[in-house]
Length: 267
Image (cartoon, rainbow, N blue to C red; front, top):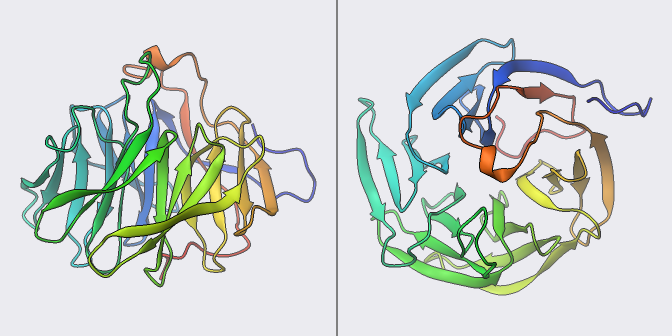
């Protein structure tokens, strides 16, 4: 449902017939995303041409790339790596860090992959705080942050100095300083979002963060400190309940709108 605010940018459908879209990433001139409901990793171009890259029978699964271009995939309790020939290998086993499935992933410019775990069985489980782990380029994983209220989308600032984590149950974006060895410190509120419930996030070229807000049916652009710079009212799928996320009716869409500043990862 596009915004009716006359000052808001026009929202256009780019792709339809999707189930549960997650982990969108801009890479090599296309938008890549995981369709958790269909078990597919898809790449779509700006004209709407799309390709199923691979099929993945896990929930959840999220993606990002190493600096050398190899794809990393969070696959329940492991991080997989896709080699240039298309084969998949285990990049890191995370079972020693948690018995719960892992959620999102983001890779910094040094090749350190940050993965997060919500800390409880979702949906339906009793809430417990989540954690963030780092997987170094050699595949060694260790816990580097904890006490996060449902860690969701993550982003690294272009200078590789800060990891920003969406705390969905905390209604805030949390910042952590990144050390050269991948460690995290100086946990702080990067932006208090008030009634905002952040899900996926990305950083733009001006250092602002866009966050998707499912309950409030909007995407919001904020600067550090919490000032809202732009809001686009939008709904991209019919939402029943968390129990229906797998095998969901394909009402999902990819929608596009002109942004005031490009994504920090765009060429």
